[in-house]
Image (cartoon, rainbow, N blue to C red):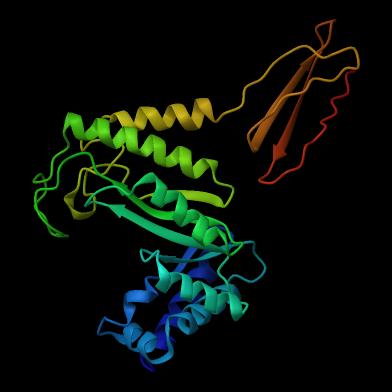
Length: 281
């Protein structure tokens, strides 16, 4: 530990200090629940002091290095059961919770039941911090063998049936997460099948960059179904009411004489009901 701690401190301080205000979401440390089993300096430190103490220290380094900026510092893990609940609970008691709680979900061996996805968000949303799904993988072809990070390129192929299944599942997965108030972000792990982790057909596009069905479905969700476009005629009081997703908007008002006024507004997450006043000339 004595050899690793100053090196880890320097790494966190140097990188956050250099890129702060340019990068706003940081996975400071991950997988502390399993790290004690690795024979390296970080594993020895966690084995000696415990996961929560190490996570608390690393988050403290990041916050010190990012002081003066509005950064988000995460703890991230693929363990989603009791061990991780215990770790986060200990951080809460120490008043050292991360700014957001990261959940890994690499589904190379099979997808999570959607009930499990929802229960996981609820379990960690209970701590009052936003939840991020930080590492998401869903494949579009049957797995040829077991866990293998050095699989020859091309041995795990995308299939038409696998692509349909991937698209259907990720449509439900994104919709479910989008609907939960505790959720704040989803990071998909491999955009393209080319050089994807484990050689898997995990991307939204194939190796030749042609889009899979999942690409089209998520484009429709994010840029159509979850994108507010509204128009109408104001009432006699000059008011027009509509519901809108959180986000940034451009409002254009045209009066009976054809005069136009355009105004930009922002509805950040948790924004209250707002009245936007546009004054015509």
